[in-house]
View: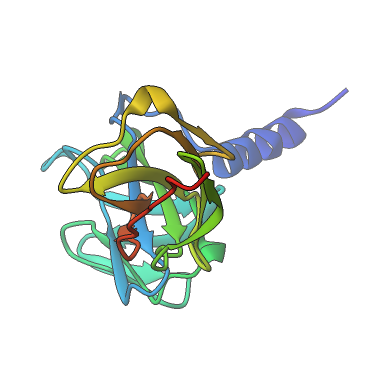
Length: 210
C-alpha cells in the first residue's frame, strides 16, 4: 500500500504530465500552413486579458515555453514567446505537427484557462497535369495528377461553357473524369488543399470520331 510520500509523488506526476484542471476551456483552433513558411504564430481564441500571472505553452505535455511576470523562458529551439502570449515557431517542419496547449495560471497557482491549437503543415500542390486516357465516339476519359501536395482534392471545370454533369463521372477521389456527350469550352482540372490551389492548362477535347 502506498504511503503519503508515494501518493504525493504520483499526484505531482499526474498534474505535470496530464495538466491541471482549468477553470475555463477556450475553443479549440486549427491552423494550416505551408511547409515553406518562415514563421507561424500560435495563439488561442479570446484569451483572457487579465488574471493570469504565468503562461505555459505545451505540446504532448512537454513544456515548450513559459512566461512569468513578463520573463519568458523557452525550452525548444526555433521558438519565441512574445509578451502577449503568442508563440512564434520559426522554420516550422512537419515534425512540429500536433496539438499545442496554452495554460494560464493565477497568483495562487490555479489554472485559470487553457486552450488548444492544432498545427497542420501541408506541402502546397503543384500545377496539375491532365492526360487523355481515351477519346472517341463522343466519350472521353481524363486523368489529373500532381507531383506534390498533401491531402489534395480534385475538381473539373470548363472555361467559357460547362459540361453536362449528368454525363460526367469522377473516380479515384476526383482524379479521373469520364464524359459522355459534347463539351462546350476547354476543360480545366483544379487541385486544392488547405494551403494552396492550382489549375491545369486548359484542354480542348474533340471526341467526335467513330
